[in-house]
Amino acid sequence: MTPERFRSVTSRYAGLRVAVVGDFCLDRYLEIDPARRETSIETGLPVYNVTRVRAQPGGAGTVLNNLVALGVGTIIPVGFCGDDGEGFELRRGLAALPGVRPDHVVATSERRTFTYCKPLVVEPGRPPVELNRFDTKNWTPTPPALEARLADALRTVVPNVDAVVVLDQVDEAETGVVTRGLLDVIGELAAAHPRVPVLADSRRSPRGWPPVSFKMNAAELAGLLGRDDAGSLDGVMSAAAELAARNGRPAFITLSERGIVAAAPDGATEHVPALPVRGPIDVVGAGDSVTANLAAALPSGASLREAIELASIASSLVIHQLGTTGTASVADLAPWVDRTPSN
Image (cartoon, rainbow, N blue to C red; front, side):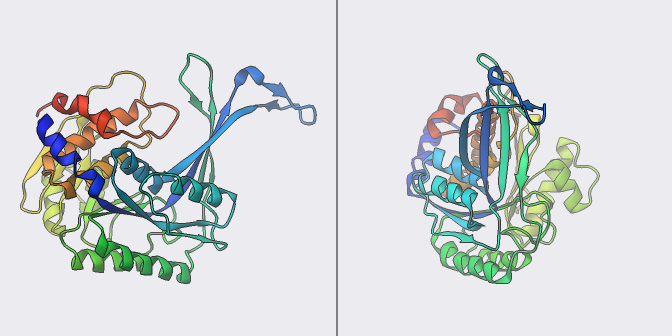
């Protein structure tokens, strides 16, 4: 991608409308100062004193944060949270972000807010160290009435956006936003609006999902198609082309240090190598930065290769941000545009 093409594509971001459908959670960071360590008088156990608490939208909210950083004009989250303190923090965090319209994030007493609570040991001059996480999730099926409200929201939103991101973040099927019933609605809307990119990512597997654009890694691709040759680059490119042809939509495969592959329904494939690692890394959020950059670039006129070039740069920038789930702005991407390695 040339600097001129970069400016042409990214100049359209402010006019985009992107829907993000999925499991929004709260990332809550507890920063611990080890210099203030104590021993509990009552239990004799160590006490870790938290000196700072910060929170931000996570899960599908990480994709949303990256879209905000890119300057996408209007971002419409569709999901739910609990009618609890964490839900209040999550909704407040979403509403504070520029361009985000959180009217379709449903607060309900029938769910707990999906929360990742991350204790971090923070010492001057050292990278933060994350301790064991405390997660709050839902382990019962999503109530039918809530599923119906989300389906109605999708039918209202999708006809009026330029791209849709669907993120399934839960471990237990049918306990989150992306239920079987909602997938049926997504399939109907994708078929009715074929020019709208629909980018889907599932923590478990997109097996049984409607034919949309999947973003996945090589192991997930091999499992989905039942192929044993997706370990090599040639095998990944062949399998990605098979998936894209089957779905009639582009497919995107992330390969960690080997970069990203894209395939078109006509069988054309592209591969962009990853940028070199430049120090300590934290891979949390890298995949979501890829998804966000694809969702912004494709409806802005980028080719498949240009889209994965931008996604590769963004993921490289994000993994070098420690102690947080990072993002990359257009200004962050710009200096790296002409440094992307060629095949």
